Image 1 (tube, rainbow, N blue to C red):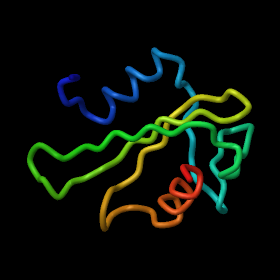
Image 2 (tube, one colour; image 1 turned 90 degrees about the vertical axis):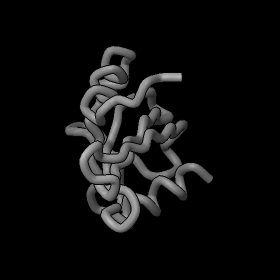
Image 3 (cartoon, rainbow, N blue to C red; image 1 turned 60 degrees about the vertical axis):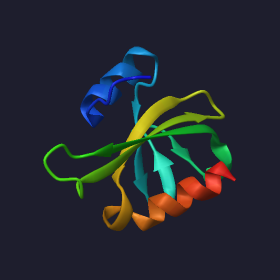
Length: 96
């Protein structure tokens, strides 16, 4: 099992493995600088959860995403009460 990494360390590791897109969420779509994706265009999602070392309430989640067009990247969000509820709903719908 991997020792716990920071979000930044995990993003760097994933970039080295081809997950180079920096996704962002806007207007109900997952986007890159040049593309936009609906839930139906998400092929695979893997989640990594992180807890702050100094504050256990400092929770975040990193999504590793592959689209049907072959784009691979990540998007980070808060977890729990700090989560972007629209992004959370988007991810849940994409996973089902």
